[in-house]
Length: 134
Image (cartoon, rainbow, N blue to C red; front, side):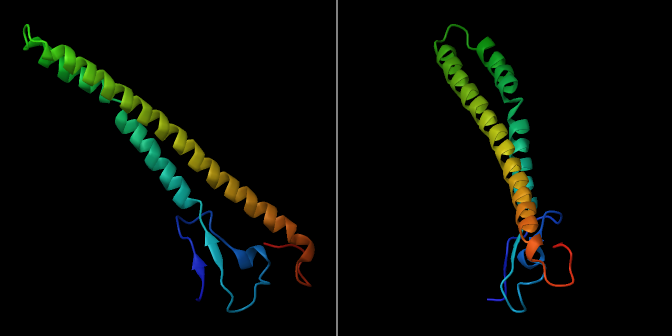
């Protein structure tokens, strides 16, 4: 196996050999990661949250016309309870998407902080002639 990589958007991508100051040697597997995949997933979760936002008012508007034409039927009352059930479900889904987006962004942040901690921990064992690990 020539290498292992987790590829995402450029920016947060790090090579283990870079963290080790190139001490990994030629031909060794290299672990790469990117915060891009976590940030894209967070953006997707936020997009779902936004997309679900107007559902409650859209359902209310759709049911207004339905109720006006139903006359004395009992079905509209039952439809109202079904609508409220769906509204609750959509609101729960919005809440979950919002919470998930925050958690995914936290993973990207934590991953970057871990990279910096690892990089700093190898600074004391940098190869001769180098004052720091890049």
